[in-house]
View 1 (cartoon, rainbow, N blue to C red):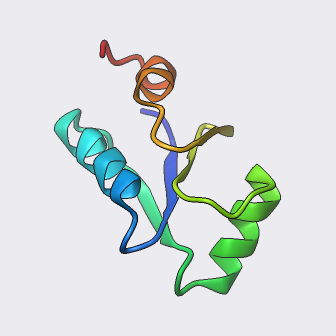
View 2 (cartoon, rainbow, N blue to C red; view 1 turned 180 degrees about the horizontal axis):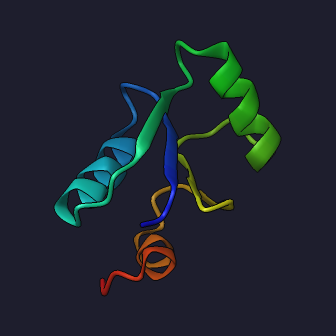
View 3 (tube, helix red, strand yellow; view 1 turned 135 degrees about the vertical axis):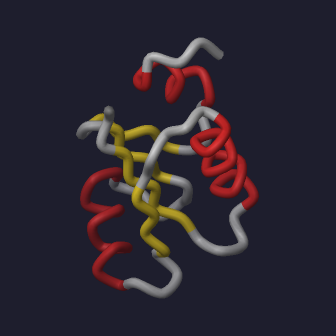
Length: 79
């Protein structure tokens, strides 16, 4: 199974959509709330070079935004 981390905020609609996609496809993930966790925010910016969420790390590959097709491809899910 892939190692998935999502950097998100509580009010982000696309973050919510990404998490629902993971849950619907039985993908376990670690969530980091960058609105409250300064260390997670710095980690996200270092990995993605930007401040927007969601930023999704799938086995070291960074996906910026909820790019459903790219995420499905990286996870081996048919979209």
